[in-house]
Amino acid sequence: MLPGEADGGGRHFDPSIIQTAKRARMESESAAYGVSPRRPVIFHGEPVWNQSADESVFEEEISVGSGLSIPREVREQALDEADSKAIGRWGEQLVYSHYLQKSKAENSPIVSVEWMNDANEIGLPYDLKVTMTTEPGLSEGAGLVDGDDVSHLRTVFIEVKATLADKKAFFEISHPQLKFAEEKEMDFHIMRVYNVGKVDCVKIVSLENLIQKIKGKQVKVCMVI
Image 1 (tube, helix red, strand yellow):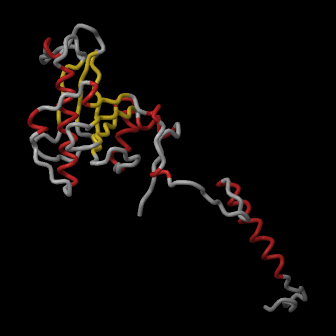
Image 2 (tube, helix red, strand yellow; image 1 turned 30 degrees about the horizontal axis):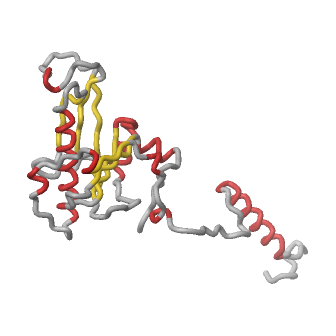
Image 3 (tube, one colour; image 1 turned 60 degrees about the horizontal axis):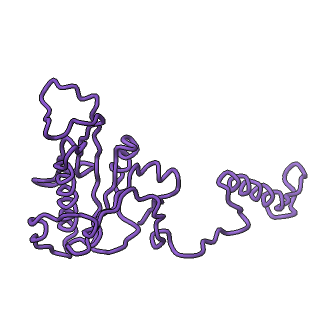
């Protein structure tokens, strides 16, 4: 039916009715998402992956100058900088060695440190498992045997993200890792290792309770296709 023509009942077709209904539907749908249909959303400034992260989200930063001791096997390890798996493994071994050293300190709360991928990559949503006591006086030296009360123990799961760069505000994280982080909350930590392979300036930065920081908008999640 053309505009102005009458239908079988003698009524005339008015195209403005359809336009008005379509506009109302668009405005209703846009309101649900908080977006104006008449004004496009324009983002200014740097992309989020180029923006500097708020330093307050980092719980701990450790560098060579502040006491990070790198074991000889890590220092002497040949590193293929084009091999992302080798970069990741170097970072994992460094963080593992760091926690082993902390566990040997006097009155250390760390009971055990386990590197899940020591032999090979097994595909877990975390790389290290650190068990520590919430009761002072019990350390690795005390030991644990079957049947011991473990209610005073806390296990922290650590995912290591390593990079050759000195600063890099973004990294990949898988869906299983996000799900696991949501499940464990404060017991899931991200350890960022910067300057992989550069023993004079390598550093470890800890990001604790990832999900809380995502919900608090201190950390952003991006999608890349």
